[in-house]
Length: 435
Image 1 (cartoon, rainbow, N blue to C red):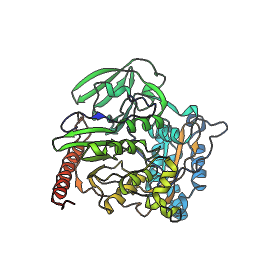
Image 2 (spheres, rainbow, N blue to C red; image 1 turned 90 degrees about the vertical axis):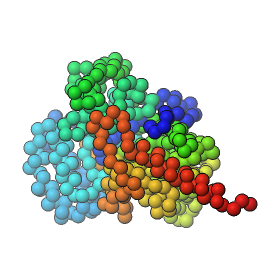
Image 3 (cartoon, one colour; image 1 turned 30 degrees about the vertical axis):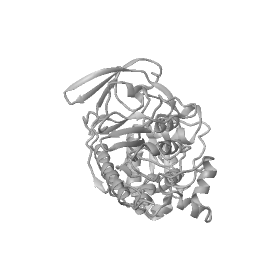
Image 4 (cartoon, rainbow, N blue to C red; image 1 turned 135 degrees about the horizontal axis):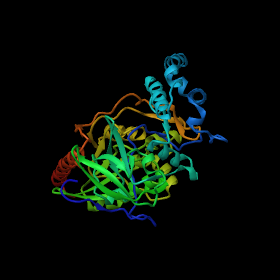
């Protein structure tokens, strides 16, 4: 962080400040407006794992689920059938679940439609999405509070969750993950069955220098963990130009408590950095209220009712709006509802965007059925106008994750941009005639 250490600011009702969160490097979901409305099918009565079922039977189940969703309408029925036949041979000859998932996702990717994916229980996306939409005991998973990304066959730390077991260790974003105990590193399997046990984690900060830390995995709902960590991310960020606020909005689901925490800080800071890199979508309603004073899309949906009234009814809290300078961090993980929010914020001149372009993945989820005992489908539903239209940043800053040792040039530049905005705001305030 630039110019000093972040100080945690959020105080939740009965929330333990030592909690956590962070990110999902791959596909991301979720409704752009409203709540997830029963599109997912219930689990099978006797679900089987891929190894028991085989590629041919599993692919048939996938095709049935796609056929029952809006996906074929969005892609075009004739084009979809042609793509299926082009990929069928490779998919049905898959011998492992990982190989099958890779080939099914190649089929989905060929459609050019976002929010179209097959996730297995070896991926964080699977556990996060299931725990968000299926409140059942089988959605708990062992983890230590970091989100990895695979680059050229190696696993690197993409994010570390605030308040998680990993946060207190000698781990940094960009470290290469080598092994957990006697297991090669993998996002899920490496920690399976190890909750509550102290195990060695080997990492490399540089290609030729590795060290070992001792970790104790926990078993819990990733959705709950992410929600708590998002609140815990709200912090003061000292800077030579004054005091800034910071929050990492990993997802746009929940009660909006992180926005209330930021608003409580507004009188004590000069501006805010909203980190929208990575995570999942949800609904932009809380974010629109926070930045714009009302949720215009919600107002249209409610037949003209003020968006603020809609939001007030949902949260039961008094509402305020952020009025000081805003910088938003964006990247290829800024998707879905987050893209709707940054589009509106830029359109109304409420924020400067720093980072790299978003992917233009702006489609509501049309369904999320579980497939067998070890996979979930994300199926596209309503397509927004922004689908397929990446949002470029106002200030372009790249970030190479590999062996970054925690360095974050995007956040550093965001702080400098916010400082410039604060200086300009102060000049305008000083030049304004007094009453």
